[in-house]
Length: 482
Ligand SMILES: [Zn+2]
Image (cartoon, rainbow, N blue to C red; front, side, top):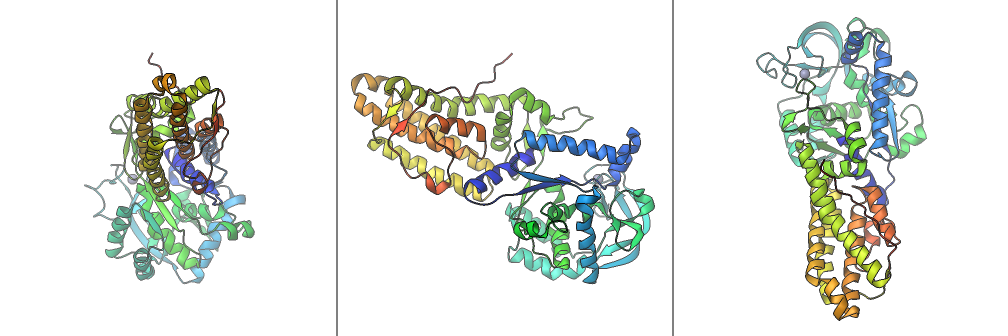
């Protein structure tokens, strides 16, 4: 859910600012994990995958993910031609060979580990004992791409957000890249997965085929016109546990196949719950569906984008969630917006014709600078910091309202008061507009009260005079304690 919301924030920001956006997501279903889980549940593995994918698709819709395609890697008709073509291209480039292999394999990770990577013999992620696997597999000649991958990082051919992850990967590359196995025996996969072209006894390694979802999601091998239009991807959004696949294996595969590289990778951390890693055994797993049903998608979007640092791990707790919503979304932003709109509507019949006075111009200058920073931060994909800046604007706006005390001023000097309200309405407009990528529905409602819609960054202008305010209703509601 976190990743969907994050992707959507970036997508909406880009779209609003004139980019064409297509989002591709999917499920990598061809894993041994799924085969075993299905066996345990005594259902066909295809059935298990379909159920899981349906849940994901429903969730993507609930978080209002922008227009997206969802590729299920086990569905032959819409995916298999992609990885099979990539395999053939890599093979033609001389980068695939067969070799006997034995190694320690973590099924949960779907990854081999060397002895030095294991921690006291256990998978460093799952703390479980990996399985000793011995078989003849196909390998991808990753070592051949050592220099090219080094260059790729040096020249920022793929922009990495945050930079620290790029350094981490460069460190890994410097240790020397080793070829990696890209197939499994049919027996071990129980015939589940994408068959290797020209060798029915072998099935593709789940990552080899799953990464190709990025390609088939925009038509590769199925709709070449669409593929030309959308590839290379501007961005991949991934968790920090799978960056080696995205920043080393995947670029090398694309280089080998002669395809352009994605332009950037945005890497996020993990969410803990109540300070602990979410796990079924601990019983602290947060169900996104429940959260959305209970609190509404806009609050959920707000909390996760504002409270979780974009590039680091962050924590969810119900207490923090309520505090964020009540103190910030309602107490800060909602309070200012509602006070201003209500005041303009009740005291001026909604018609504000004056321009802001000097004090208003000065405060709008402060706000304008922060507005530019928000936009810059969003282009740098720093969603969390951008949201914090919007709260800063909220603080400035509330302070101005408080200091100007329009409810007093209106009794003494209505003309002067109108100028103050004009400045406040300008700030409502700016806040409403800036909130669009984060809480699109609320943004549209706020702007709707002043007869506007979210607009591209450059189009909002410095300042407006002349507002017609419709009867306002509360946009952000407090979560009541029960
Ligand atoms: Zn593992």
